[in-house]
Image 1 (cartoon, rainbow, N blue to C red):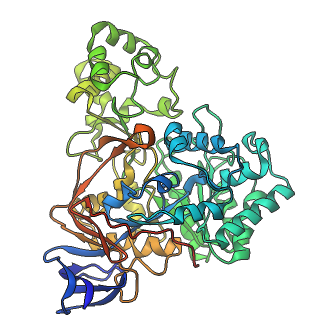
Image 2: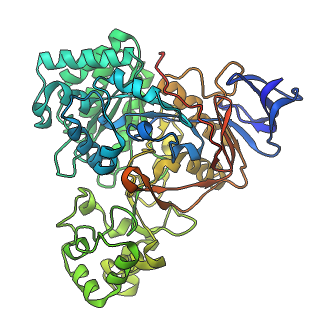
Image 3: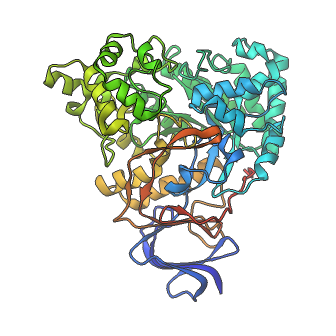
Length: 565
């Protein structure tokens, strides 16, 4: 008798093949059989009329801190993700020399919007090396599996100290030591190495990430550590500005060719250089045709900031009169902002002057929209705050101010930061058509106060499948076997006998995203945005049901996965 039988669902096996009605039997955490009329199991799930899919593999998350203190890795876990790769963008918490922990906390706070007090209380830093960090992760059971990348910033600060923070170039001794550290970490089970080369990644003090100006010789030297071990991939984040996309891509390509290891990089349709993504897509496709494994990771919707009084950012966060009341409870803050005198002061002040968010000045009212319920991620140009202000003969700041006060301050303004240059998702639609691209960039576990993109996996199905009519088999494949293959996880991503039993049972008709809300459940009472979805009847990790109808069962079969390829 099988431990669990999922009975009578439409099996979408993750390969891209057409779905078929079948039973799925699970024994010992693995898929035992798939077919019709399988014998009864000790436990059964009636999946009649539902989809049965592999669990999703998210290749770009930031649970490096949360995985230490939390067994429930929401939001990813409540959106069908059963395996998450963390440690992206070159930031993380190991290796770390005693006494330098605050440097890594400050960087994570600025780059990924995880408050320093939360990290300080949640992390005990009982490790120094990356292997010791993984050993600490091993000790905590979770509701999903996690895989860790070695973050370049932590390695660089560990080896170079203040010289890394000053953005000095590494010498040959530095490079050799970084190569050794990364190779040892991958040998111990890390899935590879991540780095950031974007000016958007700063501490709250405005200091750039220590890896920003790392030279090609440094990157190639570290990558040779992966070659020596014979496994692991590299993850790059870059502005692709210096001096043009082809030059920066050429650097990445040479590093990949020199090391023989695959790489992925973040790709979005930027609002300031609207054609750059097409050039980078063409370059990556050419590299793939020539046997150089470089794959772009792209978002399935706008990367959008939720600006509101509940979150960490709003259009007036930097105004001095707003900062004076920002500490007040929501109801008192709303009451103060409704006072004519306070309103007039805030609207008259420089709203950027005191901001700790470096991107705020780049956010225009032309791409700010009322968010609504249900949430709308594809708003029209005519619905923007700028367009509404023009129709009403008001300043955009006035319209935004009133939107913040709607619903007693519980409303959000959706601001498309990138990937919405022409007010369409045509770029994502084009990227979906290319087999070399990867769906990702959810940033699960990060940007907790103003971005809620951990719901990407559900959006892919609800929008691209239900609304746009793309084949569900392909959308499932892109989030399961495709991402598992890219990460180096051969034991999952497919519903196939012998593979790991990570499975979703999805009510397709009911599948929908809910409006995000704010929780205050981080260490020290820290806040985080949380967005749920309807339609997940069950999520199963290693054969154990972890969620039923979006609610945790208490089962914690997840573990730290150590790399094998």
